[in-house]
Amino acid sequence: TRQMQDKATVRDRLARMAGCDPSELIITRNTTESLDTVISGFEWEPGDEAVMAVHDYPHMLAQFRLMARRHGMVDRLVTVPLDPGSDEEVVQVYADAITPRTRAILVVHTMGKPCAMDPILELAKARAIPVIEDAAQAIVGELKGIKSVMKPVEAAGAALDDARVLWDMAEEMDDQES
Image 1 (cartoon, rainbow, N blue to C red):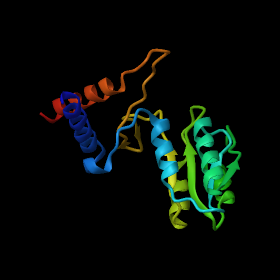
Image 2: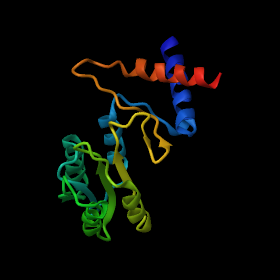
Image 3: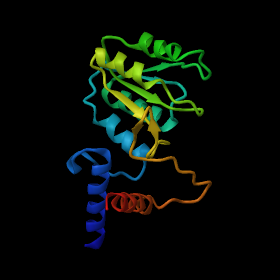
Image 4: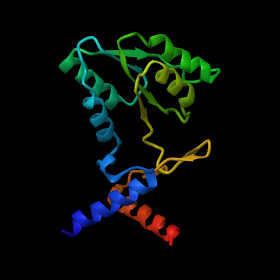
């Protein structure tokens, strides 16, 4: 059908934008659904831990609570200062929460402040811990010269047709390539 062809075309164009193979990309209805898929995709074992901030997006915290009930994993909630004196102060909060049982770290950019991702990623990489970054407000944004696939969108109460937005972005990309 036309709808399936359009979805495949958008998926292929988004994969090019993201620099990945289309088979590595899925399109979900929203960031919450995407992060739910990632969080529930871990093979949690009893006693495994995930580190997250108390002010993370409530639905993500709820998804981790669900994983704790289902699999016996442990949610390690940390209190990240909302107005930290330095990035190191935030990183130290996450570092102090990591144990040998830590299997994931959830990081969110909130209150208009981006989280210090580089040092958190270094900390996690040294311990082979995956980092789940909730970057819901970062569509085609740029940080340190690196572009993400999405750009911020303000809806002010209006419903957005995500497929239309993605299609428009893909068409813009095609125009730039020609």
